[in-house]
Each structure stands twice: as C-alpha cells, then as structure tokens.
Image 1 (cartoon, helix red, strand yellow):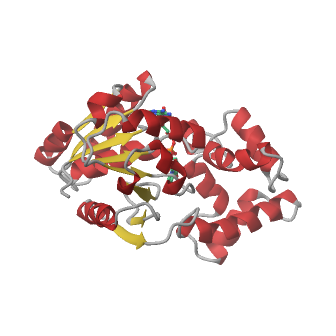
Image 2 (cartoon, helix red, strand yellow):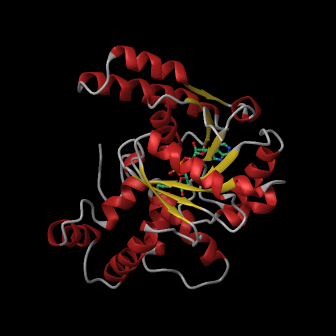
Image 3 (spheres, protein in one colour):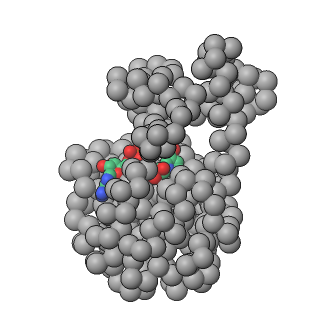
Length: 284
Ligand code: NAI
C-alpha cells in the first residue's frame, strides 16, 4: 500500500499546510479547492513561506525548487483526486459539506485510494455510507500550524482496514510527524477532548464575568505555562471554526454553550482571529 501521490481537498488554513508539508518531504501533492481565489492565495503563501525557509537557512534554493515542482493547486476535483493514493479532506467543519463532497469524491477516486478526513471532531464512520468501500476511510487529524506541529491522530473506525491506518501512520512519520494510532474512534479524538474541558471552563469564567478572555489566557500562559491560552488559540484556529463546531447543537435546540453569543457576534463582524486581522486580539 504505497503512497506516492497525495490530494488535499480544501486549501484553507490547514489544507495548504498539510499539502506543503507533504511536498517538502517528497510527495507529489495537489491541493483542490472549489473557491477560485484560493489558488492564487495558496501560491502567494507558498512562495512567501518557502522564501522564508531559505532566508532562515532551513532549506536550499534547490530544495525549494523541487518542492514547488511537487506542489500544485487547482479547482478540478477529478483531475486532483483521480490518481491520488491518499486523499486528505480539509474543508469546512460542516457535516453536510463534507458528506456531499465525499459522495462526489467516491465517484472519481481509484479503488485503492485511502481517504482521510482532517475533521477536528467528526469520526469517519459518520461518512461511511458515502463510499462503496468504507474500509479505506479513516481520520487523520493534524494540529495547527500543521507545518510545525508534530502531533497527529490517526483514528481507525470499525469499518477501517487496519492496513490503511498503518499506511497513513507511515505517511505521517515520513512527513516528520509523531502520530498516534487510535484503534477505537471517539469524537474529538485525543487532544481536542482534553483541551475541550479547559475551554469549557474558560468560557464559563468569561460568560459569568469573572475574567476577560485576555485574563483567562494570562492564567493559562503565565500561571500554567501553556504556550497559548484558549482565546489566543481560538484566534489561531479561527473563531469561525469554534462557531461551526457549536452551531449544529444550538440549531438542534440544545442550550447555548457559554460565550456562544459573543462568538456568534464576532463571526458576524468578521472578527475571525489571526486570519482576518482581528479576534480576541488585534494582529494588524
Ligand atoms: P478553512 O475555512 O481555513 O479552509 C477550508 C477551505 O475549504 C476553504 O478554502 C474553502 O474554500 C474550502 N472548501 C469548502 N468547501 C469545499 C468543497 N466542497 N470542496 C473544496 N473545497 C472546499 O478551514 P480550516 O481551518 O483549514 O479547517 C479545515 C478542516 O480542518 C476542518 O474540518 C477543521 O475542523 C479541521 N482542523 C482545523 C484546525 C484549525 O486549527 N483551524 C486544526 C485541525 C483540524
């Protein structure tokens, strides 16, 4: 089960980093995104990132040239995915969007292709009916920034062929990651479940007027020695991502989690965190 060609679907915050990381480590990568402007943005970002690697002495000009040859971006799903050995889905964290993409994808991939979702919380078995052969479907969850963070969760569902999980573990190691192999799936996997408990308490303290978001971050960063407090981390991962994660339960009639209204108003004002220049902190 050799992986040579990789297709990443979604060229946003995560997809472009996962794709470039794989290209740097020798894989042929195509990033597919349905939004036309993304191609130009990813290429500009790629050029800036790789120029920075040369400036810092981390890569040579030759390595950068080779990486660029292996990294492509386009807007044609079939052209991007049909010859890929591994497809990593990294589109928005919305169930219906992922399910409809997977149905489209299942018609164009080769029978031996492995499909991995980078979803932050959704287990792959939620999507098994989108594929004729779900034994090649699993989770492969990277952390942000994926070019830097080593930890990855490879999560096998009851439908997953363990050989596929093993092949994805091997791929992760070859691109410089330190993956864990979860042989029993659970929503949120490992690290997001652990941090979820801290985040819920952080939002409780803000919602009930005990602390500001910035003070919560100070407690975590200066008191507990965490590299980033929960609100600074939300700015990094995208305030809209947190909103997308909370919204389905609220829309289904469940009580609003703490800080839901604050997060909703920030998304409506375009305060999405670092990517928009403003969030709980200003970046411009
Ligand atoms: P993002 O919003 O930055 O990027 C999503 C990209 O997908 C956009 O460029 C959008 O145009 C594209 N897209 C949407 N629907 C599409 C479709 N049907 N076909 C092709 N492209 C489509 O999102 P982000 O933050 O990169 O997250 C992607 C996934 O990674 C989500 O499932 C998220 O939960 C997960 N994730 C996010 C992390 C983070 O820190 N932001 C960390 C780990 C996982």
